[in-house]
Each structure stands twice: as structure tokens, then as C-alpha cells.
Length: 272
Image 1 (cartoon, rainbow, N blue to C red):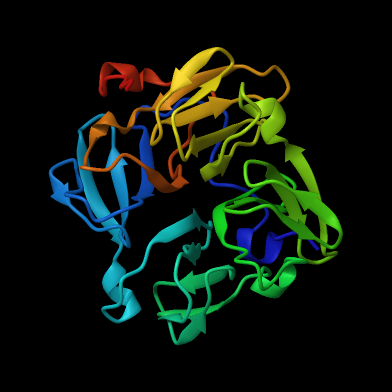
Image 2: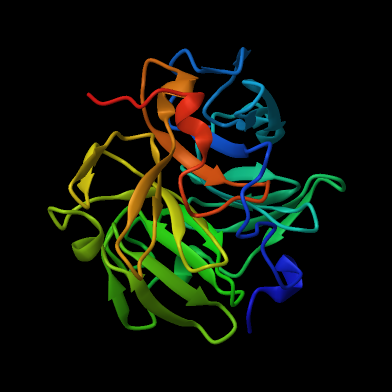
């Protein structure tokens, strides 16, 4: 079973370049975060317009009843529902209490939530902190995900920097991008992810990383084509004013290409 019942069969992105590029994101810590003139927390999700340099909160941490939450994985479905996972156990959203290895489908209109095909028990080492660090939906409807720790699903092992395809209907998983081939030193963590229709990915790494001979800073969003190994800077974290420097979740709501957009004209490339 593919995730067509939730995804309505397709991603809300295309291969063409948008004239008003937007990005939705969440960050790691509450460290003086500001984007487009808006102050926000690590449990908020921001939508940022790179053309107008304006931002708004599209998901508010207050929905968790006043408890602190880090959004570690996030994806917006065509029906308006949100897929998300959080850092802490025992958080309640839309009447549903869940843990940090669970994936939740949240309806912001009805303020209700259900489990979305991935639970802590989905992972073979279910009791070994199977936190989801990134989530997206592949063109075939399966999930694309990464985890904070090395894990396995139904006997298929993967490392914390791998990008994994998972179909909850058949409970089958496969590694589609291995960290050994993605990062120049063979070791890195994917902490935000968005799959594009052409098979390429937008992602962010937990630390500064050399990829294809280019140094990218943690918090940067990188465009990566697994077929060619080509990479480029898609979004610079310099747009975010923050004491920290790490992206926690990522989604592209507007049509975008896997190639570098004209964001370099709007936000400078930071290297530390």
C-alpha cells in the first residue's frame, strides 16, 4: 500500500521553478530565532517567502498544550493535513498522545490526529530510541525517511545518515541513498528532507559537511541528485537569525526544481 490515501496520489511540487519560492521549516532550539521579521520557537513551523523576505507561523507549538516540543520531521499533504514527528515522548496533539518514534497525521481544520503508518514498534529496535529525523513522500507514494540513530525495519538495517524508502502497507524498507555515498567522509546525519518528483532530494545535515567537494553548513538546504551526484545550495540558513544554526524539518509548498534557485541573490551563503 502506498500513501495515496493521505497523499492524494502526488506531491504538491513540480519540476518547474517557482516565481515566488517558498519554504516551510522548523529549527532545533529556542535560541533567539527570527525569520522574515517574525520571532518563533523550535516547536513552530514557519513559512518563508524568499522573494519578499516575509514569514508567518503555519503551525504553532501552542497546539501541544503548552508543552515544549521540537518538530523533528514534517510534511504537508495535498489535503491540508500535516505529517509530523516530535522529539519528546508523551506529547498530545489533536487528542492523540504519541511518542518520538511515531509519525502522526494531523488535520488542522478539525484539530484531530491519527497515527500515520509509522510507530516506534515499526523499527526492529523499537525500544532503542527510534526517533524520526526527517520525513517526506516519494513520487511512488512511499515514505522517504531518516532517523537519529542506526535502525532496522523488518530486517533491513540502515544508518542514521541514510535516506530510506518505507511502505507501511507491505512493511518493506530499502535504502535509497546511503550516507556512505552522500557525504564525502561517509558519515553524516540527515535532519530535514524533501523528496522531489524527479528523484532528487532537498535535505539538511546536522553538522557542517563536505558533499561532492563542497562545504555546506549545518542548517543549509542542499539539492542532491542521486543519479548524478550533483549538489547545489538551495537555501542558506543565513536567512534565519538564530544563536543556533540547525534546521529540524523542511517542506517545499510551492513548485520548485531540484536545481539551485535564485536564492543566492536573496540570502548569502554562510561558511563557518
